[in-house]
Amino acid sequence: MKETLLPQNTRLAAVLLGFIGGALDVFCHMQYDVLVATQTGNIILLIADVQQHDLASTILRVLSILSFSAGFLFGVFVKDHRKTAYWRSYTLLPLVGCSLILPFLPNIPYLNVCLIAFATGMMMLTFTGSLIEKHPFTILMTSGNYRKMLMALYRVLQGKGDQEEFKRQAINYGLIVGSFLTGAISSAILTIGYHDFAIWLISFALIVFLTFYSYSVRKDHLQYSNL
Image (tube, one colour):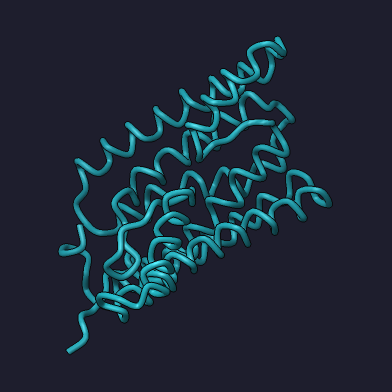
């Protein structure tokens, strides 16, 4: 009998999370010259650009790191006080709301980056430790997933061991890498043409994820078991 997957561990969930991760970082880098999901990237940029003396970019990157950290810690608080499986839906609502209203907010990069980074930190905490089927993956960034895809492909080409398992891993990690790149490319194209309104691509993906997750929890009666 095939084991039923929890909604957050399905391929659809992983693909959507990968898509959102790629789209978020490209949008924020193009609009504000800052990253919100890949915070290690912000640290590298801060160190690498130290000679440029660009105070505005430095402040934005520091604010992104601090806001992301605050959002992540707030997500820990929410998780520690969770009562039902819908807590994952609740922690995504700030990013949904922020992405929907951002095009109508005053053009204040410091404010916008803080809002997006805080909400992204909550999302990162919420789905840390996620699986695609039974394979662990990194959400919102793809370097680790890319390495795992390459390793699985190597094992497939090697022709030894559990080939079905290695093929499954290669497909799963390939889906995440592909969705990340698709989100990044789509976000870049839309940002060039529509600027702030391009973030609605992320809003749409988040709403699809929320709808799928909440419906699955209710349909399979996972409210009190999928904590």
